Image (cartoon, rainbow, N blue to C red; front, side, top):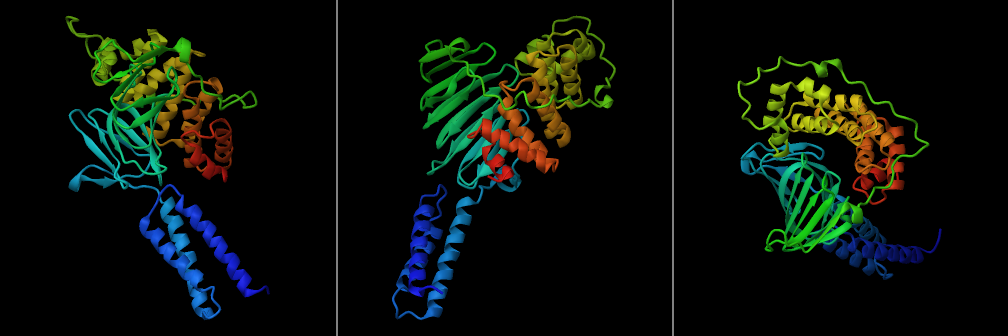
Length: 431
Protein backbone atom coordinates (compact mmCIF):
# COMPACT_ATOMS: atom_id res chain seq x y z
CA UNK A 1 0.00 0.00 0.00
CA UNK A 2 1.16 3.58 -0.56
CA UNK A 3 1.74 6.20 2.07
CA UNK A 4 -1.63 7.06 3.73
CA UNK A 5 -0.66 10.72 4.09
CA UNK A 6 0.17 10.98 0.37
CA UNK A 7 -3.13 9.32 -0.56
CA UNK A 8 -4.96 11.76 1.71
CA UNK A 9 -3.18 14.69 0.09
CA UNK A 10 -4.17 13.49 -3.39
CA UNK A 11 -7.76 13.10 -2.23
CA UNK A 12 -7.74 16.62 -0.84
CA UNK A 13 -6.47 18.01 -4.14
CA UNK A 14 -9.17 16.12 -6.02
CA UNK A 15 -11.84 17.55 -3.76
CA UNK A 16 -10.41 21.03 -4.28
CA UNK A 17 -10.68 20.56 -8.05
CA UNK A 18 -14.23 19.21 -7.82
CA UNK A 19 -15.22 22.07 -5.54
CA UNK A 20 -13.99 24.61 -8.08
CA UNK A 21 -15.85 22.82 -10.90
CA UNK A 22 -19.07 22.53 -8.93
CA UNK A 23 -19.01 26.18 -7.88
CA UNK A 24 -19.06 27.09 -11.58
CA UNK A 25 -22.06 24.93 -12.49
CA UNK A 26 -25.07 26.66 -13.97
CA UNK A 27 -27.65 25.68 -11.42
CA UNK A 28 -26.60 26.75 -7.94
CA UNK A 29 -27.95 25.72 -4.57
CA UNK A 30 -26.47 27.85 -1.76
CA UNK A 31 -27.42 25.31 0.89
CA UNK A 32 -25.69 22.44 -0.88
CA UNK A 33 -22.62 24.56 -1.52
CA UNK A 34 -22.40 25.55 2.13
CA UNK A 35 -22.61 21.89 3.15
CA UNK A 36 -19.90 21.04 0.65
CA UNK A 37 -17.56 23.76 1.90
CA UNK A 38 -18.11 22.73 5.51
CA UNK A 39 -17.31 19.12 4.69
CA UNK A 40 -14.22 20.10 2.68
CA UNK A 41 -12.92 22.22 5.54
CA UNK A 42 -13.48 19.31 7.87
CA UNK A 43 -11.45 17.11 5.53
CA UNK A 44 -8.58 19.59 5.45
CA UNK A 45 -8.49 19.64 9.22
CA UNK A 46 -7.99 15.86 9.20
CA UNK A 47 -4.70 16.21 7.40
CA UNK A 48 -2.98 16.80 10.75
CA UNK A 49 -1.41 13.61 12.15
CA UNK A 50 -3.19 13.93 15.47
CA UNK A 51 -6.62 13.22 13.94
CA UNK A 52 -7.97 9.72 14.60
CA UNK A 53 -8.50 7.54 11.50
CA UNK A 54 -12.23 6.90 12.18
CA UNK A 55 -12.84 10.67 12.20
CA UNK A 56 -10.82 10.96 8.99
CA UNK A 57 -12.97 8.34 7.27
CA UNK A 58 -16.16 10.05 8.38
CA UNK A 59 -14.95 13.40 7.03
CA UNK A 60 -14.05 11.84 3.67
CA UNK A 61 -17.45 10.19 3.38
CA UNK A 62 -19.18 13.43 4.35
CA UNK A 63 -17.26 15.34 1.69
CA UNK A 64 -18.14 12.82 -1.00
CA UNK A 65 -21.76 12.82 0.11
CA UNK A 66 -21.82 16.61 -0.16
CA UNK A 67 -20.32 16.36 -3.66
CA UNK A 68 -22.94 13.83 -4.74
CA UNK A 69 -25.75 15.94 -3.30
CA UNK A 70 -24.53 19.10 -4.97
CA UNK A 71 -24.16 17.39 -8.35
CA UNK A 72 -27.64 15.90 -8.05
CA UNK A 73 -29.19 19.26 -7.18
CA UNK A 74 -27.29 21.00 -9.98
CA UNK A 75 -28.58 18.54 -12.57
CA UNK A 76 -32.15 18.18 -11.35
CA UNK A 77 -34.56 19.38 -14.09
CA UNK A 78 -36.98 22.16 -13.29
CA UNK A 79 -40.55 21.22 -12.48
CA UNK A 80 -43.63 23.09 -13.66
CA UNK A 81 -47.35 23.38 -13.01
CA UNK A 82 -50.24 24.35 -15.25
CA UNK A 83 -53.11 26.42 -13.86
CA UNK A 84 -53.55 28.44 -10.68
CA UNK A 85 -54.71 27.67 -7.15
CA UNK A 86 -56.68 24.49 -6.62
CA UNK A 87 -56.91 24.00 -10.38
CA UNK A 88 -53.12 23.75 -10.80
CA UNK A 89 -51.63 20.43 -11.75
CA UNK A 90 -48.23 18.95 -12.54
CA UNK A 91 -47.71 18.14 -16.20
CA UNK A 92 -44.86 16.15 -17.67
CA UNK A 93 -42.69 17.35 -20.52
CA UNK A 94 -44.17 16.63 -23.93
CA UNK A 95 -47.82 17.25 -23.05
CA UNK A 96 -49.78 19.72 -25.17
CA UNK A 97 -51.65 22.56 -23.48
CA UNK A 98 -54.50 24.21 -25.39
CA UNK A 99 -56.64 27.17 -24.34
CA UNK A 100 -60.16 27.96 -25.46
CA UNK A 101 -61.48 31.40 -26.49
CA UNK A 102 -61.32 33.83 -23.55
CA UNK A 103 -59.20 31.47 -21.44
CA UNK A 104 -55.74 32.34 -20.08
CA UNK A 105 -53.76 29.59 -18.34
CA UNK A 106 -50.60 30.22 -16.30
CA UNK A 107 -47.61 27.91 -16.60
CA UNK A 108 -45.17 28.23 -13.68
CA UNK A 109 -41.69 26.72 -13.31
CA UNK A 110 -39.86 25.92 -10.10
CA UNK A 111 -37.23 28.62 -10.71
CA UNK A 112 -39.90 31.35 -10.75
CA UNK A 113 -40.22 31.63 -14.53
CA UNK A 114 -43.83 31.91 -15.70
CA UNK A 115 -45.72 31.85 -18.99
CA UNK A 116 -49.23 33.18 -19.47
CA UNK A 117 -50.80 31.11 -22.24
CA UNK A 118 -53.21 33.36 -24.09
CA UNK A 119 -56.66 32.41 -25.49
CA UNK A 120 -56.84 30.02 -28.45
CA UNK A 121 -53.23 28.97 -28.08
CA UNK A 122 -51.59 25.56 -28.42
CA UNK A 123 -48.25 25.11 -26.67
CA UNK A 124 -46.00 22.23 -25.59
CA UNK A 125 -43.15 22.08 -23.07
CA UNK A 126 -40.95 19.81 -25.18
CA UNK A 127 -38.12 19.34 -22.69
CA UNK A 128 -37.01 20.60 -19.29
CA UNK A 129 -33.45 20.92 -18.01
CA UNK A 130 -31.87 22.20 -14.80
CA UNK A 131 -31.25 25.61 -16.34
CA UNK A 132 -34.30 26.10 -18.56
CA UNK A 133 -36.76 24.52 -20.96
CA UNK A 134 -37.71 24.26 -24.61
CA UNK A 135 -41.25 25.44 -25.30
CA UNK A 136 -42.97 24.84 -28.64
CA UNK A 137 -45.59 27.44 -29.55
CA UNK A 138 -47.55 25.82 -32.37
CA UNK A 139 -50.16 28.56 -32.68
CA UNK A 140 -51.29 31.53 -30.59
CA UNK A 141 -49.49 33.71 -28.06
CA UNK A 142 -47.71 33.55 -24.72
CA UNK A 143 -46.54 36.23 -22.31
CA UNK A 144 -43.26 35.16 -20.71
CA UNK A 145 -41.37 36.30 -17.63
CA UNK A 146 -38.08 34.41 -17.46
CA UNK A 147 -36.02 34.65 -14.28
CA UNK A 148 -32.41 35.57 -14.99
CA UNK A 149 -29.98 33.05 -13.52
CA UNK A 150 -26.35 32.21 -14.34
CA UNK A 151 -26.33 29.77 -17.23
CA UNK A 152 -30.08 30.03 -17.86
CA UNK A 153 -31.16 28.87 -21.32
CA UNK A 154 -34.78 29.02 -22.45
CA UNK A 155 -35.94 28.43 -25.98
CA UNK A 156 -39.34 29.21 -27.54
CA UNK A 157 -39.76 27.50 -30.92
CA UNK A 158 -42.47 28.70 -33.32
CA UNK A 159 -42.54 27.08 -36.74
CA UNK A 160 -39.05 27.48 -38.23
CA UNK A 161 -38.14 30.23 -35.75
CA UNK A 162 -36.45 30.06 -32.35
CA UNK A 163 -36.34 32.69 -29.61
CA UNK A 164 -33.36 32.19 -27.28
CA UNK A 165 -33.87 33.70 -23.83
CA UNK A 166 -31.66 34.04 -20.75
CA UNK A 167 -33.84 36.28 -18.59
CA UNK A 168 -36.40 38.84 -19.68
CA UNK A 169 -40.08 39.72 -20.10
CA UNK A 170 -41.52 39.41 -23.57
CA UNK A 171 -44.57 38.43 -25.62
CA UNK A 172 -44.35 36.08 -28.58
CA UNK A 173 -47.14 35.41 -31.08
CA UNK A 174 -47.14 32.89 -33.92
CA UNK A 175 -49.94 32.59 -36.45
CA UNK A 176 -49.59 29.19 -38.06
CA UNK A 177 -52.05 29.96 -40.86
CA UNK A 178 -50.35 33.17 -42.01
CA UNK A 179 -46.89 32.15 -40.74
CA UNK A 180 -46.39 35.47 -38.97
CA UNK A 181 -44.12 35.83 -35.92
CA UNK A 182 -44.23 38.81 -33.55
CA UNK A 183 -41.80 39.20 -30.63
CA UNK A 184 -42.38 42.17 -28.31
CA UNK A 185 -39.70 42.89 -25.67
CA UNK A 186 -40.60 44.57 -22.36
CA UNK A 187 -37.28 43.88 -20.56
CA UNK A 188 -33.90 42.38 -21.36
CA UNK A 189 -33.07 40.96 -24.78
CA UNK A 190 -33.56 37.82 -26.86
CA UNK A 191 -31.96 36.33 -29.97
CA UNK A 192 -34.26 35.21 -32.78
CA UNK A 193 -33.04 32.70 -35.37
CA UNK A 194 -34.67 31.31 -38.48
CA UNK A 195 -35.26 31.96 -42.16
CA UNK A 196 -35.24 35.59 -43.26
CA UNK A 197 -33.86 36.96 -39.94
CA UNK A 198 -30.72 34.81 -39.99
CA UNK A 199 -28.88 33.37 -37.02
CA UNK A 200 -29.34 35.21 -33.72
CA UNK A 201 -31.02 38.55 -34.56
CA UNK A 202 -30.93 40.59 -31.32
CA UNK A 203 -34.21 42.10 -30.11
CA UNK A 204 -33.92 44.42 -27.09
CA UNK A 205 -36.22 46.03 -24.56
CA UNK A 206 -38.63 48.43 -26.20
CA UNK A 207 -38.41 46.75 -29.62
CA UNK A 208 -40.88 44.68 -31.61
CA UNK A 209 -39.88 42.17 -34.29
CA UNK A 210 -42.41 41.15 -36.93
CA UNK A 211 -41.55 38.42 -39.43
CA UNK A 212 -43.77 37.54 -42.39
CA UNK A 213 -42.45 34.22 -43.67
CA UNK A 214 -44.75 33.95 -46.68
CA UNK A 215 -43.79 37.46 -47.78
CA UNK A 216 -40.11 36.75 -46.92
CA UNK A 217 -39.75 40.00 -44.98
CA UNK A 218 -39.23 41.24 -41.45
CA UNK A 219 -39.38 44.50 -39.54
CA UNK A 220 -37.62 45.48 -36.30
CA UNK A 221 -38.77 48.74 -34.78
CA UNK A 222 -39.11 50.55 -31.48
CA UNK A 223 -42.40 49.63 -29.85
CA UNK A 224 -43.46 53.27 -29.47
CA UNK A 225 -42.54 54.20 -33.04
CA UNK A 226 -45.39 54.75 -35.51
CA UNK A 227 -46.30 51.89 -37.83
CA UNK A 228 -44.29 52.00 -41.02
CA UNK A 229 -41.18 53.48 -39.36
CA UNK A 230 -38.96 50.42 -39.05
CA UNK A 231 -35.61 50.54 -37.34
CA UNK A 232 -34.39 47.85 -39.72
CA UNK A 233 -35.92 45.47 -42.17
CA UNK A 234 -34.93 42.81 -44.63
CA UNK A 235 -36.08 40.30 -47.19
CA UNK A 236 -35.35 36.74 -48.09
CA UNK A 237 -33.22 37.86 -51.04
CA UNK A 238 -30.68 39.30 -48.64
CA UNK A 239 -31.05 37.23 -45.50
CA UNK A 240 -32.59 33.84 -46.20
CA UNK A 241 -30.78 31.10 -44.29
CA UNK A 242 -31.19 27.45 -45.20
CA UNK A 243 -30.64 24.80 -42.54
CA UNK A 244 -27.86 22.27 -43.16
CA UNK A 245 -29.10 18.87 -44.18
CA UNK A 246 -29.83 16.17 -41.67
CA UNK A 247 -30.13 13.58 -44.39
CA UNK A 248 -27.98 12.63 -47.30
CA UNK A 249 -27.65 10.55 -50.40
CA UNK A 250 -26.62 7.51 -48.35
CA UNK A 251 -29.97 7.42 -46.61
CA UNK A 252 -32.34 4.97 -48.32
CA UNK A 253 -35.62 6.31 -49.73
CA UNK A 254 -38.38 6.31 -47.18
CA UNK A 255 -41.84 5.27 -48.22
CA UNK A 256 -44.54 7.32 -46.59
CA UNK A 257 -46.82 5.24 -44.38
CA UNK A 258 -50.29 4.40 -45.65
CA UNK A 259 -53.21 6.39 -44.33
CA UNK A 260 -55.98 4.33 -42.71
CA UNK A 261 -59.07 4.23 -44.87
CA UNK A 262 -61.19 5.13 -41.84
CA UNK A 263 -59.52 8.54 -41.84
CA UNK A 264 -61.15 9.62 -45.10
CA UNK A 265 -64.78 8.83 -44.38
CA UNK A 266 -66.82 11.94 -45.05
CA UNK A 267 -70.09 12.91 -43.33
CA UNK A 268 -72.94 14.20 -45.48
CA UNK A 269 -72.35 17.70 -46.76
CA UNK A 270 -74.46 20.52 -45.43
CA UNK A 271 -76.79 22.14 -47.92
CA UNK A 272 -75.54 25.36 -49.47
CA UNK A 273 -77.15 28.54 -48.14
CA UNK A 274 -79.57 30.37 -50.43
CA UNK A 275 -77.29 33.41 -50.53
CA UNK A 276 -73.51 33.64 -50.23
CA UNK A 277 -72.99 36.76 -48.14
CA UNK A 278 -70.68 34.94 -45.73
CA UNK A 279 -66.87 35.18 -45.93
CA UNK A 280 -65.16 32.35 -47.77
CA UNK A 281 -63.33 29.57 -45.99
CA UNK A 282 -60.05 31.06 -47.26
CA UNK A 283 -60.82 34.44 -45.70
CA UNK A 284 -61.81 32.83 -42.41
CA UNK A 285 -58.66 30.73 -42.35
CA UNK A 286 -56.45 33.73 -43.11
CA UNK A 287 -58.00 35.59 -40.17
CA UNK A 288 -57.35 32.67 -37.80
CA UNK A 289 -61.01 31.55 -37.51
CA UNK A 290 -60.21 27.91 -38.16
CA UNK A 291 -63.42 26.32 -36.89
CA UNK A 292 -65.55 28.69 -38.94
CA UNK A 293 -63.25 28.15 -41.93
CA UNK A 294 -63.71 24.39 -41.71
CA UNK A 295 -67.49 24.79 -41.48
CA UNK A 296 -67.45 27.03 -44.56
CA UNK A 297 -65.33 24.46 -46.41
CA UNK A 298 -67.85 21.76 -45.52
CA UNK A 299 -70.62 23.87 -46.99
CA UNK A 300 -68.64 24.24 -50.23
CA UNK A 301 -67.77 20.54 -50.21
CA UNK A 302 -64.63 19.59 -48.30
CA UNK A 303 -63.79 16.56 -50.44
CA UNK A 304 -64.44 18.48 -53.65
CA UNK A 305 -61.99 21.15 -52.47
CA UNK A 306 -59.44 18.44 -51.74
CA UNK A 307 -59.85 17.17 -55.31
CA UNK A 308 -59.77 20.56 -57.03
CA UNK A 309 -57.89 23.01 -54.79
CA UNK A 310 -54.32 24.18 -55.21
CA UNK A 311 -51.46 22.95 -53.04
CA UNK A 312 -51.75 26.13 -50.94
CA UNK A 313 -55.51 25.55 -50.59
CA UNK A 314 -54.97 22.02 -49.34
CA UNK A 315 -52.39 23.22 -46.82
CA UNK A 316 -54.83 25.85 -45.56
CA UNK A 317 -57.63 23.27 -45.35
CA UNK A 318 -55.37 20.97 -43.36
CA UNK A 319 -54.40 23.78 -40.98
CA UNK A 320 -58.03 24.76 -40.47
CA UNK A 321 -58.97 21.17 -39.65
CA UNK A 322 -55.95 20.46 -37.48
CA UNK A 323 -56.18 23.65 -35.45
CA UNK A 324 -59.92 23.26 -34.91
CA UNK A 325 -59.37 19.73 -33.56
CA UNK A 326 -60.67 17.73 -36.54
CA UNK A 327 -57.79 15.26 -36.96
CA UNK A 328 -59.49 13.03 -39.60
CA UNK A 329 -60.21 16.04 -41.83
CA UNK A 330 -56.61 17.23 -41.46
CA UNK A 331 -55.37 13.80 -42.54
CA UNK A 332 -57.69 13.84 -45.57
CA UNK A 333 -56.38 17.23 -46.77
CA UNK A 334 -52.71 16.39 -46.11
CA UNK A 335 -53.02 13.02 -47.86
CA UNK A 336 -54.67 14.66 -50.88
CA UNK A 337 -51.89 17.23 -50.93
CA UNK A 338 -49.22 14.53 -51.07
CA UNK A 339 -51.13 12.52 -53.68
CA UNK A 340 -51.90 15.38 -56.03
CA UNK A 341 -48.71 17.46 -55.71
CA UNK A 342 -45.77 15.07 -55.27
CA UNK A 343 -42.48 16.93 -55.10
CA UNK A 344 -44.11 20.22 -54.06
CA UNK A 345 -42.78 21.99 -50.95
CA UNK A 346 -46.27 21.90 -49.43
CA UNK A 347 -46.44 18.14 -50.03
CA UNK A 348 -43.14 17.59 -48.21
CA UNK A 349 -44.34 19.67 -45.27
CA UNK A 350 -47.55 17.63 -45.28
CA UNK A 351 -45.40 14.61 -44.41
CA UNK A 352 -44.00 16.52 -41.44
CA UNK A 353 -47.49 17.54 -40.28
CA UNK A 354 -48.75 13.96 -40.64
CA UNK A 355 -45.87 12.96 -38.38
CA UNK A 356 -46.88 15.58 -35.84
CA UNK A 357 -50.47 14.32 -35.91
CA UNK A 358 -49.41 10.69 -35.55
CA UNK A 359 -47.19 11.54 -32.58
CA UNK A 360 -49.26 14.15 -30.73
CA UNK A 361 -52.87 13.34 -31.56
CA UNK A 362 -52.78 9.59 -32.17
CA UNK A 363 -49.83 8.36 -30.12
CA UNK A 364 -48.67 6.24 -33.06
CA UNK A 365 -44.94 6.70 -32.66
CA UNK A 366 -43.79 4.17 -35.26
CA UNK A 367 -46.00 5.84 -37.87
CA UNK A 368 -44.77 9.30 -36.84
CA UNK A 369 -41.17 8.11 -37.32
CA UNK A 370 -42.05 7.00 -40.87
CA UNK A 371 -43.48 10.42 -41.69
CA UNK A 372 -40.51 12.33 -40.26
CA UNK A 373 -38.16 10.08 -42.24
CA UNK A 374 -40.24 10.77 -45.37
CA UNK A 375 -39.87 14.52 -44.87
CA UNK A 376 -36.11 14.24 -44.31
CA UNK A 377 -35.73 12.12 -47.45
CA UNK A 378 -37.70 14.61 -49.56
CA UNK A 379 -36.26 17.78 -48.02
CA UNK A 380 -32.92 16.99 -46.34
CA UNK A 381 -32.17 20.72 -46.31
CA UNK A 382 -35.74 21.94 -45.85
CA UNK A 383 -36.80 24.60 -43.38
CA UNK A 384 -38.26 21.93 -41.08
CA UNK A 385 -35.32 19.52 -41.38
CA UNK A 386 -33.88 20.21 -37.93
CA UNK A 387 -37.26 19.89 -36.24
CA UNK A 388 -38.05 16.73 -38.21
CA UNK A 389 -34.69 15.22 -37.21
CA UNK A 390 -35.39 15.98 -33.56
CA UNK A 391 -38.94 14.66 -33.69
CA UNK A 392 -37.62 11.52 -35.38
CA UNK A 393 -35.43 10.86 -32.34
CA UNK A 394 -38.45 11.32 -30.05
CA UNK A 395 -40.57 9.00 -32.18
CA UNK A 396 -37.96 6.23 -32.29
CA UNK A 397 -37.33 6.51 -28.56
CA UNK A 398 -41.06 6.35 -27.75
CA UNK A 399 -41.49 3.31 -30.02
CA UNK A 400 -38.58 1.65 -28.18
CA UNK A 401 -36.52 1.35 -31.33
CA UNK A 402 -33.28 1.91 -29.44
CA UNK A 403 -30.81 1.07 -32.21
CA UNK A 404 -32.39 3.42 -34.78
CA UNK A 405 -32.86 6.09 -32.12
CA UNK A 406 -29.12 6.03 -31.40
CA UNK A 407 -28.36 6.33 -35.11
CA UNK A 408 -30.78 9.24 -35.51
CA UNK A 409 -29.31 10.89 -32.42
CA UNK A 410 -25.76 10.63 -33.79
CA UNK A 411 -26.82 12.11 -37.14
CA UNK A 412 -28.58 14.94 -35.32
CA UNK A 413 -25.48 15.77 -33.26
CA UNK A 414 -23.37 15.74 -36.41
CA UNK A 415 -25.72 18.12 -38.26
CA UNK A 416 -27.03 20.22 -35.35
CA UNK A 417 -24.55 20.00 -32.44
CA UNK A 418 -26.19 22.92 -30.65
CA UNK A 419 -29.78 22.27 -31.81
CA UNK A 420 -32.76 22.18 -29.43
CA UNK A 421 -32.75 18.35 -29.32
CA UNK A 422 -29.00 18.13 -28.73
CA UNK A 423 -29.20 17.24 -25.03
CA UNK A 424 -31.72 14.47 -25.70
CA UNK A 425 -29.59 13.24 -28.60
CA UNK A 426 -26.48 13.11 -26.40
CA UNK A 427 -28.27 11.07 -23.76
CA UNK A 428 -29.63 8.59 -26.32
CA UNK A 429 -26.36 8.36 -28.28
CA UNK A 430 -24.43 7.81 -25.06
CA UNK A 431 -22.13 10.78 -25.57
